[in-house]
Length: 387
Image (cartoon, rainbow, N blue to C red; front, top):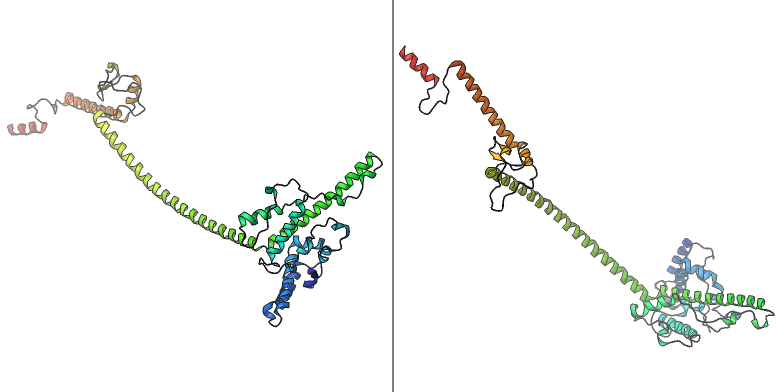
């Protein structure tokens, strides 16, 4: 005798328009009431009732599952029986498997979760194989597996395939009209169009039933839950390692930036000092010929000696000759040339002053000749002695 399926709303004792808050409040009260630990004298019955309460809350608290349940509530409560022409194709009734009463525990025994649903999907596959006469071995549908099945090899491929399942059944038994009875071509086409709509509607409904069953089973599959937890732990671990690596790279970059600033300052300081020493060395040996860019003619000959310079490009102040107007012009603008001109001008001015003094007072020059120079102070002293 088949187990009578109870309505989820009746199990929780709420109206069909109850909101989520009311469902939570009622579920907590009933879960506390029927929990096996609270009923030590009647553990078996309390456990069964507790599972019904838990199952009802899981379905009605999920908006998608609740919408599906409300739409097919009557069929689910009837267990798919007595549906009339709807089940003339003798397909497996799936509505009875949208309830936790169809399995007992998550073991692999005859009534266990994995044994029950493995049989369900094997039956669904066999029903479709009838309409695949040219089916090859590699076209067989993925298996449901057992509690120990590997996720990547069995569980993952199974849910990927069945979540988008499309049946191969023709559903010709859903046709309403016999096209052989059509009086003319126009009526036949209208009959064919209507029959196609009915076949497509039945196929879509069956696909929807199977896909929703897959979603229902997947949500409760312990293998999926374990894999999801594993992914979350792996993701958290990767995030922690990434964060740690990012912090280490940030510290390293900060350290490199500090070292780069220090090294760069030292390098520029040393370079400036070397340039000053080189400039002083060149000025000492060759003089400051050009403050601006070198002219293409300002080069040494292949034998290492300077080329002959033109006589009209000779600097009297610096005692240097140049071979081009540009080099001579740059030299005249140089600081050293201007200093030398200023020195010579000062010397010439001093000489003019001394000459004017000699011509006006008859005083001998301070620099007459070696051994014959007598300062004015000495002459005054000798004159006083003669007197």
